[in-house]
Length: 368
Image 1 (cartoon, one colour):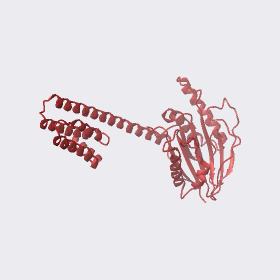
Image 2 (cartoon, one colour):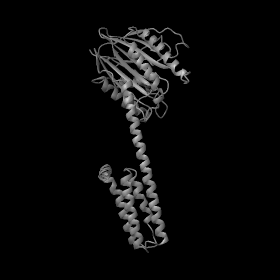
Image 3 (cartoon, one colour):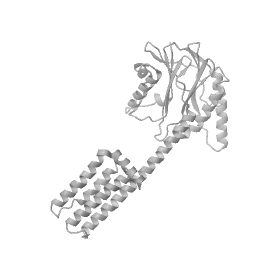
Image 4 (tube, rainbow, N blue to C red):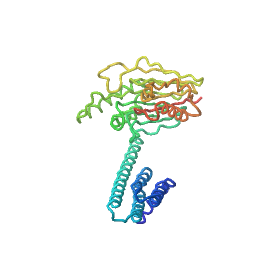
């Protein structure tokens, strides 16, 4: 009983002044029905009180308001012709039935809410294991990330990123596994695990990408043996090596969108990648030799890595998000984190608040 009272108090605090609306309606309808002609019956309107309460409160408070409405209906019946007239009995029975249905709906909604909370808790734990937070500082680099999942009930999906420190360099991976949401988590986990192990063995990004290709092919073979269709399984990726002592970007492209380099003067341009390699998992179908490209990374610049969930985001007029132009206007502020916060808000405003696909953003700033 004590627990029930505590839960009721909690619900009351949640609804605070809002509960005055259904209570006021009960009083207004009851007084009006009692004062006007007996031939006019307003009692059936009392059902609006528990219905309104269910919109902002739980089952217990809704049941309490419904019970008060039922008491009010009984009082009206007693003062207008007697409690046992067929009309009043029908009104009381109908109000009781509707109140029970509303309370039952509230309980179903509460159970779904608890399940949704549990799913989100699990997905947060999965993301924490797979998508380990990148270090904010790595040598002369400052790093920030943002992940936007398309699924409402999951905070992890097919987009991925990782960073590994190897002595005097930082190796980065950003990728996009085909698909979205929880269905792509297995492939993303395999790719992230392989990168964290192989990044210490290969200094050249192209050779590291080749090693990731071999590991990913083994993963696909294993799930194919388990009966899963892998005909369209692949992942685009960028593999980068950022040395501490040289202001350069060394990268190998595996069919991924090119990075965006933001320079201190306000410029923003996509890095040209003339020799893009095939996505991971498609090496057998497109046997093109991967090459390492090198670009200048001047101190004070910011490198923006992203997945196609960003560039393929559209507004109501089906216009794609103009990333280079918008990023140039949202020039990096005090830190990569501030820049990504501003870019995230701008991106969500462009699409109306919801992305159709998972999106990942990684901003790497090189200190002057």
